[in-house]
Image (cartoon, rainbow, N blue to C red; front, side):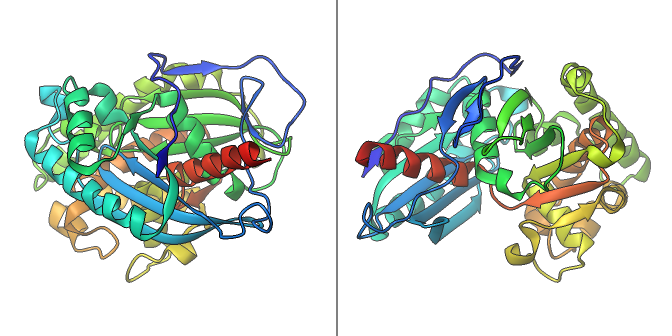
Length: 369
């Protein structure tokens, strides 16, 4: 199995592009072609339908996706997801703890076992904010390589944003003017303004804020059983996030309310969408691609922010693992709705892994052509 390298991590946390170029059949950034957004037919080029793998190790979750190319994209043949909380305690210590490393290595070992069983011939494994921020990130990366054989690529915030857009932009509602795509992670949140007039989205501007559901929750500790403390903590979370979005918000265009298009990819938006539909348990088939009124998202967010930890844990689509983190996600989501006042929120249960797969398949197609 081969590993494909990625660009080196960058220090920048945001940027914009003033240049325009003729739209090309590829996702673009700063006017340059980056990654093809669709996959050609498997007939001829892939007679045996080779398998590709994508691993996304985030601050909270470890996820794997295995797929084969098809005429209109790819067919998923295996998937795996586990909460590992790699960034637990990172805000205070600046390091990835031994227990967090153990959890992540255990999950990655499962991924490593799945790849050869699914005959994966080309894979890419990426790590994001926790490994970018941790002072012992290099030590952890080496341990993963030594114990699992997986070579984690610590990608920049810019690359993380690009892959998320590549993986989910197809779910954007049609419309005029730029659209905003966001990814609420465990350690950071990526905001990406895209132009969809061409055959593939062009990134016009972007920002990575240092707040995700884990980092924000750990930065604002409070007594969850005290209603006053819950309310004050939520307000403080909103203030932190709003301040971190301020420079990006100032650059955003202002339009008629009907023109704002918004698409989110994260556990926060999929969870709130599940509550909107009153699902007894999570169902990706009805959530991925769903459009939810913003008013409903705000009402559910307010309800969760004021609920006790036990009340949140009793909600089937949240559970004990996410009960403490969903409030931080709600604070981030509401701050996004403030700066981009869309009347509807698109929901994507796809993102970085799908972006990696499209990138790998497109690159391999160009080499084979």
